[in-house]
Structures are given as C-alpha cells and as structure tokens.
Image (cartoon, rainbow, N blue to C red; front, side):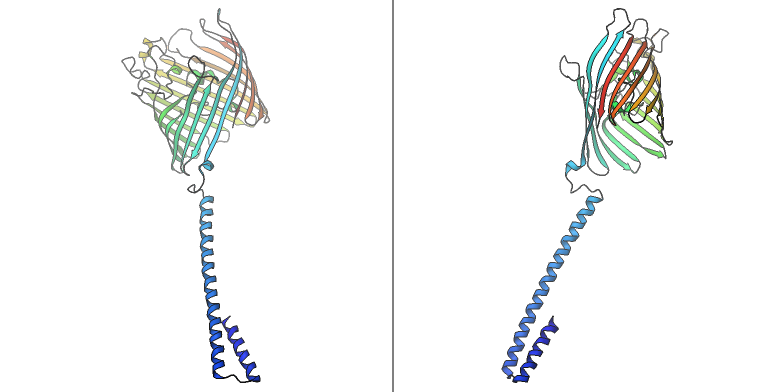
Length: 407
C-alpha cells in the first residue's frame, strides 16, 4: 500500500514536471499531504489487526466450550440434560378358588404397583438414583396400599470397574430382587420362593461396593441395616423394616459373586449374615445366614431359570415358632419365546417357612402360562396355577391375568 502511494506521488510529480516544474514550496506541500495519507492508511491497518485478534480470541473460547461439552463435561450444561425419568406399573386380575374348607376365594382386580424412577448425573463419576412406589392404588389409614421409597442412593465410580453405593438400595440376592419390572419375567405374580424366602422386594440402607474382578466375574459386598422381626413373628418376609426408622443394633453383611462370561448365561451365589433377626427383642441374639444360588440361561427362544434359597437360623427362633430355624425354597422355570411377541413358560416351585420341623409345612405349586409383548416393554400375561398346601392352610387353584409396562 505504501509503495503504491509513493509511486502515485512520484508519477504526479513527473507528469507535472513535463508540463511545468513545481516550486520548492509546492514540492514540500505535496510531500506533507502524502505523509498524512500514509499515516492514515497505517492507522487503518493497525485497527484491522486488533479486530482480527479479538475475533480469533472469541473463536478460541467457543471452540473450548464445544470441546468441554463433547467430552462430557457437565459444568456448563443445564441440570435437566443430566436428569432422567422412568418407571413401571402392573395391574392384575386374580380368580383363584380356595380348596381349604371354609377358606375364602380370591377374586379381585388390583392395580398392584405404580413406580417412578428418578435419576441425576452430578458428573461422569457420580450419580443419583431413586424409586418411589405406590402399592394397591390407595394408601393411608385403613387403605390397602402403601407409598414406599424403594431406592435412593448415590453411586460413585471408584475406578474403571469398581463402584461405591451409599443410601437405600435393593439387596444383591436372587433373580427378581434387583430386576423385577413386569416385562422382564414370566407369570402375573412374582414367584413364591423369591417372595416368601428371599424376600423380594427387599431393600436396606447402608454402603455397597461392586465391580468386576476378572472378565465375566463380578462381585457385590454390602454393610446394611437388617431384618427386624417382632417378638411374635417368625416368617422372614415379615422382618422387612424398609429403612423406616429401622432398628439397627445389629447390621447385616451380604456378598455376591456372579459369572456372565458366556453369552446368555448368568450364574450367581449370595450369602448374608445377620447377628440378630429380632434386633434385641427376644433378649438373646437369634443369628441367621441366608444362602442363595441361581442360574439363568437364554439361547435363541429357549430360556431357563433356576433358584435355590435357604435360611439357617439360630434355634432361639423356635421359642416363637417350631421349625422356623430352617426356611427354604427352590424353583425351576423353562420357557420359550416365539419371536419378539409370544412366550410360553412352566414353573415348579417348593417353599417352606418351617422346614426345621417334621410337620407337614411345605407348599408346592405349578404355574403355566403365556406372555404377549405388545411392544418391547408392554406385556399382557395369563397363567394358571395349582397348589398343594399343608392340610390346614389355604390352597389355591385358578387363573391370573395381568398387564404391565416399563420405560
């Protein structure tokens, strides 16, 4: 630019010289004018350079923000982007005849469960999960249902394959206790072994560590509140305190090992120890050990589930009920899915909450039925059951209908 201006000035000077030679005063005026124009052009160039530098700085800041967002940094994202909502529900119709003389039949329609999940990610390593359930549609004084907080915990990644939980969470036992959405299992009602022996759904408050120790091998270890039977109770299911001002003079310790290294196969074993099922209520400690093992297998349409659960309890519980020192059950369930929509199953189960005695206290049950998945997570169910119960206990035969969904 400067060369062009000087060249133009010299050209004008030469052209003028061919016509008339300027005086010294005129030459001095021309030089001063050209210097002023040069200074103005230099100022414009400097201003353009500063604007270009500011633009580059803004572009670099924008690029840094985009990089943070893409890499997973949540520092500048809205909290709603890191919050998730889900849930499940199921409604049942039971039409069961009680074969016990004078026993009451079960004929009812029940919206059994309505559950909402709420989760939030605080960062890539720390997250929150919760589950709130309304059972039997109505809750309150004199109503059949309850509003329950089934899960509410913080999970933090300690390392790549190891995690810590703190709060209220489901116990790592059995097949259904942690995964019990209605579209994930066969049958309208949850099976009686996991209901009466484990007892699903079972949650406690405390700490848990879990992770993978080898490819396909994972572990869980928990220190939590435990069961708390009243002094007139002896069935394991009655001891669930649900972390509602739960007595915790004696904690419970649970461990699980699980293998999933073969496609479609899961094999697991759990053990829990609790020093006193009555939390000091009987005066002397009644300790208990739970052992469970299960296997699930899915190959194409064929599926198989099998589970064994057993409690060994101190003999002190027999002051409340004879034979309650052993409580056990097992079941086996083959199934077959025809494509994505239709599935058939059969289940045989046995359970006994007084297995430590010689009296007839064992229940046996056959279930056969069908699931029809309207969508992947929407299912209609039908099953027929027949029971063989102890002589003085209710014995049901009949059918169940159900609809359930999860999202």
